[in-house]
Length: 49
Image (tube, helix red, strand yellow):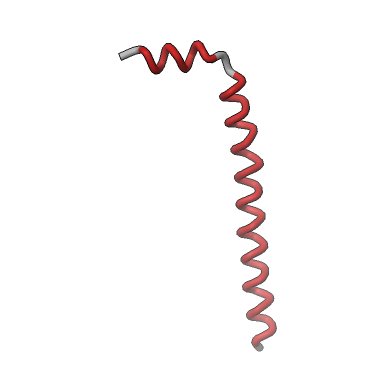
Protein backbone atom coordinates (compact mmCIF):
# COMPACT_ATOMS: atom_id res chain seq x y z
CA UNK A 1 0.00 0.00 0.00
CA UNK A 2 2.02 3.00 -1.20
CA UNK A 3 -0.64 5.42 0.00
CA UNK A 4 -0.24 4.40 3.64
CA UNK A 5 3.52 4.81 3.32
CA UNK A 6 3.10 8.37 2.01
CA UNK A 7 0.73 9.19 4.85
CA UNK A 8 3.27 7.92 7.38
CA UNK A 9 6.04 10.01 5.82
CA UNK A 10 3.81 13.10 5.83
CA UNK A 11 2.90 12.48 9.48
CA UNK A 12 6.54 12.25 10.53
CA UNK A 13 7.31 15.45 8.61
CA UNK A 14 4.47 17.25 10.40
CA UNK A 15 5.74 16.00 13.77
CA UNK A 16 9.27 17.18 12.94
CA UNK A 17 7.99 20.62 11.92
CA UNK A 18 5.95 20.89 15.11
CA UNK A 19 9.01 19.97 17.20
CA UNK A 20 11.08 22.64 15.44
CA UNK A 21 8.39 25.28 15.95
CA UNK A 22 8.02 24.21 19.59
CA UNK A 23 11.78 24.55 20.16
CA UNK A 24 11.77 27.99 18.52
CA UNK A 25 8.83 29.06 20.69
CA UNK A 26 10.80 28.01 23.79
CA UNK A 27 14.18 29.43 22.76
CA UNK A 28 12.98 32.91 21.76
CA UNK A 29 11.55 33.82 25.21
CA UNK A 30 14.66 32.41 26.94
CA UNK A 31 17.03 34.52 24.84
CA UNK A 32 14.75 37.54 25.27
CA UNK A 33 14.75 37.21 29.06
CA UNK A 34 18.54 36.82 29.05
CA UNK A 35 18.81 40.08 27.12
CA UNK A 36 16.36 41.70 29.51
CA UNK A 37 18.49 40.77 32.51
CA UNK A 38 20.77 43.53 33.82
CA UNK A 39 23.93 43.63 31.74
CA UNK A 40 26.00 44.01 34.94
CA UNK A 41 25.92 40.23 35.43
CA UNK A 42 27.27 39.58 31.94
CA UNK A 43 29.92 42.32 32.21
CA UNK A 44 31.19 41.06 35.55
CA UNK A 45 31.24 37.48 34.23
CA UNK A 46 33.21 38.52 31.14
CA UNK A 47 35.69 40.78 32.99
CA UNK A 48 36.41 38.41 35.85
CA UNK A 49 39.42 36.20 35.16
